[in-house]
Structures are given as structure tokens and as C-alpha cells.
Amino acid sequence: MAAVAPLLATQALSKHFGGLAAVREVSLQIQSGEIRAIIGPNGAGKTTLVGMICGRHVPSSGRILYRGSDITALRPWQRLRLGIAYTFQVTSIFKGLSCYENVALPAQRGLMQGFFARLAPGEPAVAARVRAALEAVGLADLAGQRADELAYGHQRLLELAMALATGPQLLILDEPTQGLAEGEITAFCALIRRVAEQATVLLIEHNMQVVLALARRVTVMDAGEILAEGTPAEIERHPAVQKAYLGR
Amino acid sequence: MSAGRRILALHLGVLAALLLLQFALPPYHHTNVARILVLAGYAIGYNVLLGYTGLMSLGHAMFFAAGMYGAGLPVYYLGVGAPAAFGLGLASGVGLALAFGLMALRTSGPSFLIVSLMFAQALFLATLYFNDVTLGDQGFILSDKLAPLGLGGAQFGFHEPGVKYNVALAIFAACLATALALRLSALGRVLIGIRENEERTRLLGYDSFRYKLVALGVSGALASAAGAGYALLFSYVGSTFASILFSIYPLLWTLLGGVGTVLGPLLGTALMFYLVDTVSGVTSSYLLFVGAALIALVLWFPQGLLGTVRSRWLPWLP
Image (cartoon, rainbow over all chains, first blue to last red; front, side):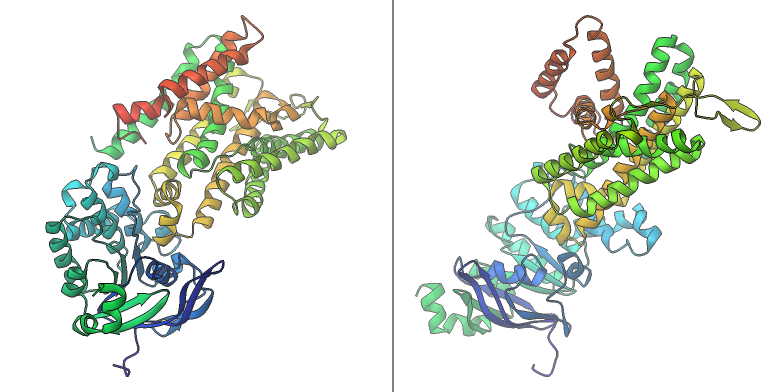
């Protein structure tokens, strides 16, 4: 595995909020095509870590490499153009707009290259991308619906559709199944497996069933550091993990 | 009829109605409507920033005044013709908007409001301070300095009501078309994303600062076009138009007509103009009635008149 350059690597990445070290010297490598889960108790620094990867937070120290080049100094919109998409832990959709408009905003991004395309990327092309993204998550019939009128589970799916519409190569999902019903979770796992055929997925997840069903490798964080990393089976057996996280 | 055609038909219909209206209006209202059209262009510019981008400014008078002085001073001192003066006014407004934006757009929300207010006050005070040039709050008259517009051999003097009305309508139509095109464009979609949730928009790949700067530039362009047009058509330039009152007016007009609707600013400007006009014939404390109208608005139509129409009956209204 060491021979293949990772899609994403963090090197001794740290983030301090005042005196609090939310993330401490985390070095993480994610290979192209994998589904990686990050687990850990609340406050372990998971969201802060992925926030630094997608550009929401500026690291206090350390570097982020994407396809071998340093992206530490890039702003969030520049990282998105490189293919790094993020879905929020707390659903962050445009509530006053229709599902169509929610997805159209990220969908037109990739079409706005060059001066004239920037002004008018062509609504049919945008519409085709919107339709594809909404169909992927099963919301095509609700395109005209206002986002705040959707059921909670559908809002989570809309959030995912927005990320998919950007054509991501690295899709970061922050607790995507939080608050979903049992049946919805099963459908969601199937959806993520389909997405993973095209993109690398980095998943923060509390639900161990989802982690075991999806992830090929699992990284365990606690108190801002990586506690362990391995296959789901290895992680389940890991004594420190059982003590710190699984509570056995 | 498709949504796009319906929208186009509605706005062309409004412009056609305004074109025909001039033949039906008595002279007094003829001038009033010309004034309303120019001021509505100003309100449309204000709405580009508040309604589409979600940035509330309390300093838009500086852009209106930049257009006004940018057009008026060259006419008064250099005898520049109307088209060139209009261009200079427009350039002054856009230049000011971009320079102001580079500094002020580091702030947002209430801080942006206060910074815009401070910049506008600085410009207002400058028009008083340099009163040997600007003639301060007394202002100056352009009518004897401004050459009539020549078009295909014919001469059109700005004092003629018909010229006033149709030039005002042309300025209004240009503002309306700009706002509508922006609203329906990819750029407009980004601005609305910024209004609804700026951080999300940044994480969807948009450098929000640049887009806000563009919005401010467009808003400043429309406001200064209205200011330049107002100076040329109504022949007067004075500090009053740079005062805070002229920053508050477009906010009130936009709130009344419907924030974030394309036609709302026209409706709001017209209603408020005639409210003030009617009431001040009866009493000098007309602001009391303006206040009462605003309270009624907040209580029963918080989205403004066209905003309410849109959310209840016409969801396709841009």
C-alpha cells in the first residue's frame, strides 16, 4: 500500500481553539477508492479534522496533501474545485429555496469555466446535472418542493445530492445517518456504496452498524489524536478502542 | 406559457404600460411619474444588494450622489454634454462602489450597515466641506448649461416633459432589465445562495467575496445611473441627495414593494411617493404617516407587497 500515493494525506495536522487542542498532530492517509470511517466519542476532534481538510478551518500547524500537492493554504472554494466536497453534520441546505435550486447552485459550478460560461452556463446542462444528482438520492420527484418542507430524512439526502452535484472525487460525510430511521439507514448505506464506485468516501459516523457495513478501514480518534487504525474487524478487537469508545 | 416567457411578458407589459401612461397623465402627474421612474431605478439598484445578496446598506446615497455629482459637475463647470455626463456619473458610482466594497466587504451584517453609513456620511460632509465647488446644500442648477440632446437632426431639450418622461423611462427600463437578467442568471443564483447561507455557498465552490463585490458594483452602477439621470432631467444637484435620508428612502421603498422581487422597488417607490405627496398637502408632519404605513407593513406584509403576492399566489414571480 505504501507504494501507491494516497489521495489525501495529512501531516502532523493540529488545530487549537484558544487553549484547547481540538486536533493534535494527526497524520492520516486515505487511498483513492476507499471508504474510510472515522469514529470516536463526542469532542474527539473528528469534525474539526475534516473541517480542516475541506477548508472550513485553518490548521494551527501541519500540512494537507491532496494528490501529492500541498493544499493547506487553499481556500474552501478552491478545494471544492479540486473535487473535495463536504456535507454538514447539522443539515445545511438553503431552506427557503426549492430542491432544484439547492442542487443547481453546486451543479452550475463545474460549468462556469471561462468568461461567457461564467455568466450563462446554460440551463439545460445545469438541469441535467441537477436531475442526475436528485435521481441518485431518490428525490427527483420532489425537485419543485421547498427544502424546509421536506421530511428530515429527505433533507439529509438533499444535502448529499448537493455534494454529489459538484462531481466530487473525495466526498466527506459528517455523521450522515444521524437522526435517520432504521429503514432509511439501510437505503443510505446502499446509496453510499454506489457513490463509492466513483468517489473516495471519508465518513464520520457514530452508528457502528453503518461503519461495519461500509468502511474498509476505520480510524479511531480520541481527544484530538488517532487512537487506532485498521480494518473494522481489527478495530472491534482493539483493546484501547473497546475501552475508550465501544465501552466494553 | 413557460415560466421564462411568462416572466418576460410580464416585465415587457409593465414597460409598455409605462410607455402608454404618459399619454393619459395630466402634466402634474406626468413629472411625478418621471421622478418615480428614476427613483425606482435607484431602488432597484438597492434591491440588488439587499434583496439578492442579503447585504443591508445604509449608505446608498453615496452612490446616488456620486452619479449626481459625477454627471452634474462636468456639465456645470466644463459644459460637457448629457451623454458624456451620464457616462461620467455612472463611472463615478461604479468606481466608488468597487473601492468601497474592497474595504467594507470584509464586514457583514450590522457591521456592514454601519460602515456603509459612515462612508456615506463622509461623502455627504465632503459635499458640504468643498462648498466652493459643490455649492453645498444650496446646490446648483443645470438647465442653462445643458445642451439639448441631438438625435438624427432633431433637438430634445431636457425641460420638455416628453423628453423627461421618456429618458426617465429608458433609465428605469435599463435598471429593470439589468436586475431581471441578474436575477435569472447563474450569477444571481450564487448571490441568492450567499444571501441564504454564505458559508454553505463558499463550501460549494464560490468565492463569496468576489461575488459580493460584483453585486455591489452592479448595485452602485444602477444607483449612480439613477443619480446621474436625476441631475440631468430635473436640473438640480445638491447635498440633500447625499444625506442619510436618501440612504433610508431606497430601503423603505424596497421594503414596501417587496425585498428580493424585481418589480417591488417600482411599486414601493410609487406608493411611497404618492403617500408623501398626498399627505404633505394636508399636513407638514407627513413622516408620521410614512411611519404608520411602515408599521402596517411590518404587521401585515412583512415580505412587502409583491413578496406577499409571490408567496401566496404567484410563486413564479422573480
